[in-house]
Image 1 (cartoon, one colour):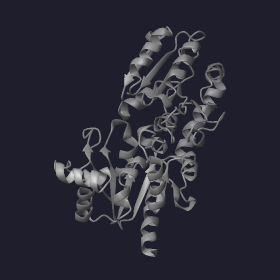
Image 2 (cartoon, rainbow, N blue to C red; image 1 turned 120 degrees about the vertical axis):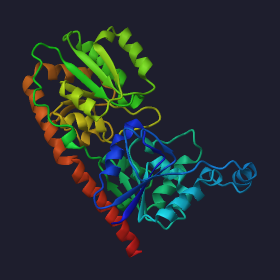
Image 3 (cartoon, helix red, strand yellow; image 1 turned 90 degrees about the horizontal axis):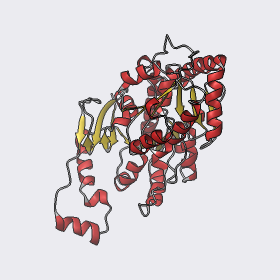
Image 4 (cartoon, rainbow, N blue to C red; image 1 turned 90 degrees about the vertical axis):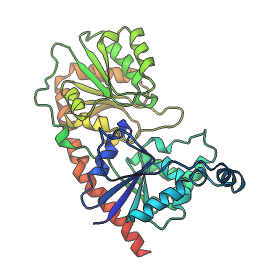
Length: 385
């Protein structure tokens, strides 16, 4: 059985549950994980992990490599040699690098190695990174270097094309959802009493549109005062969002649930009536691929209210499996929320179609088979060469 070395700088941050599913879900490939830091071992158990040793403290050598030979950080920090030694010892058949910015960091290694390699892009890794001089040039060099590039959505594929990636290198690699973990809710009913329970699950960062969600919810409560809103996730905007809820007068109706595991998320979705995700493009040009939490919510039959942003329209069909508006259009977003609350037939249709669409296009085992087919293609390219 061939072996793939999955390189992820940190294995794994709590919000990277989708990466864990992909790495552990492979069927025709063995997997060894290579990382610089091990995190969340309890949440993401995995036995075969190679943690690269920290760089040795050799001031003279580091000074020579950095300032005399002008070598990149990968070299003068000692990571190049450590990675090479691990791969020579483990002898994988191919290397899968998560994510684009990690591929940029590994570029000096990737330009030299004969190991078949692909890099997957998930959203934030196509942003310009103005704080890193020369980053766009290195990103373009990466796209020319590796034989295949994976994109989580067509919108990311289009961005990679804009960056100069040859179209023939790009393959779509959708992150699959384990449907057995997110079954359709069997007892969810339209809230005739007006006690709507709205949810949003995501990292608490700007591109998720959480401020718009809160403002829309506050306005929605004028007509449906018994409603509640649960925000699940962690991130730097927690305190500002809590303050905004206070200012809007809805703090008692908004629950910040923190990061939830899969079972708790499923219970949250089963007890809710609609899922909000009004993503927006922030100043740093960070964009979504296709939000995993949104797909999980849809799998349980939750209607989605979201935006025409990133890969969202590739999963949510307006007026079929959800309701979409342009980014930052808070008035239309509120209109859609009120429309959903006033039309039981629409709510039922969106719920049914959401569950069906996710099962047809994002089922985990089907996506794993597709990924393994891309691995097969990568190995065949080596044979052809």
